[in-house]
Length: 257
Ligand code: OAD
Image 1 (tube, protein in one colour):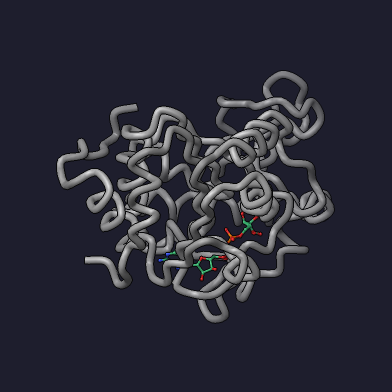
Image 2 (tube, helix red, strand yellow):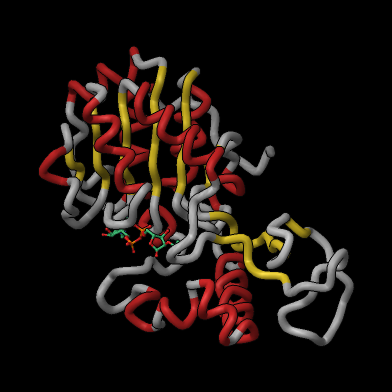
């Protein structure tokens, strides 16, 4: 049961829509038990200093600390399961021909829920890359050393995530901008809408004439600009929205990737 009614014009527009884009942030994984970043008591940045953990300088200063912090986050995510919000987006993907899911999350929970097309703007916790060659590295020999080393060139491996001060992956960002510029409906879900360039995407959609919908229990800098602001947890609102638009018979999600 949704904590807030789904607006009728949104239902009508979604039934007819051929192109829908969705931007998600840490809030969509909150109901899976994965901590967000900026919430006052529970957010990661309330407890950890990003300058010591999430910048290229931090890694150069203390690669072991940074690698271990990301290993800890990996472990938390391994213990989590996708929630009904992730699953509702799998159902939406199945209903909309031109559906683009853009995420700032590095937890991989959208794919684990069964979403096929996911643009990961900030990388992925479960991938590493070579610090010198800047290429993904999937396997490396067992060793005591932390971080491990690139099996090809011997440089340190680093998490394949975007740190403060770094560029986003160009291809994913271009595809996200294109999706935002052509969407008939654009959702901003579970993000504080503070981190650029991702935070620009809803504005690109607004300028292009899309219906822009925010789902978040708290207001954000985007809230006053959107067509509809649905205040509540994504894990409750999204399943209610999908059911109202397409009925209860939308095939369930699952780990069918
Ligand atoms: P934030 O922690 O900044 O914001 C999370 C948002 O989720 C807040 O606005 C919450 O109100 C909202 N929220 C909490 N529970 C929710 C729920 N159940 N349903 C819906 N919304 C909920 O996280 P992001 O906006 O994702 O970047 O942060 C953006 C980027 O900043 C992250 O990708 C990360 C961080 O620094 C990097 O690490 C590069």
